[in-house]
Image (cartoon, rainbow, N blue to C red):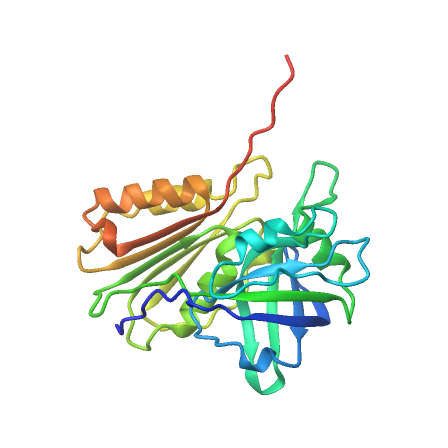
Length: 273
């Protein structure tokens, strides 16, 4: 398989955009499609191309963004007064159409004990309306398959689904390997486009009290062989990422051939005595 270098742009560009439309893709995934006058120039590379998403605060009349040069955006962002500082989160490009300057962003709809949507970005996405302002800061790709890799193993919970779907679409036609994709419910399955030699295993969590990522990790632990010349990409809840990497390394896959990233960390609720 061809080499895809991890690319973090030296001078990442910020793109202002506005919501065009929204759609509930599956029960647990809300899609927001955005566009902007310069968004057609977004340097989309496929795979798990990701970005920083900046959202206007509910009380603001205009979106305030950090002013920066080069890649040093974080300190200028923190320098914005908290009452005016936009919400910032990391997302993967779910779809990109250069000809219409449109980008799809998929948000996982987490729900609390009484069914309410949780998380500032998910709440925003479920309430988004055409014309709502946002911005995206290009951050490149993480997927870094070495040249000549014999197989690819991709593992994720639902927060990694936009990335894994993009990776499958971007893999060369002769790629072989597996995707283990955890989802909250059976209805969250969807058709994924990818090479015929890459199998897709859907792991349905079903138990709402189970820690996200645990079911995918259990499925990965049932894999008993890993070719040392292969490559793995494991993302999602932090335990899935770290323990998945550990399992694959124990099977013989070198650490430098495993990309892992904890997109988020599950916080266990305290039980009253």
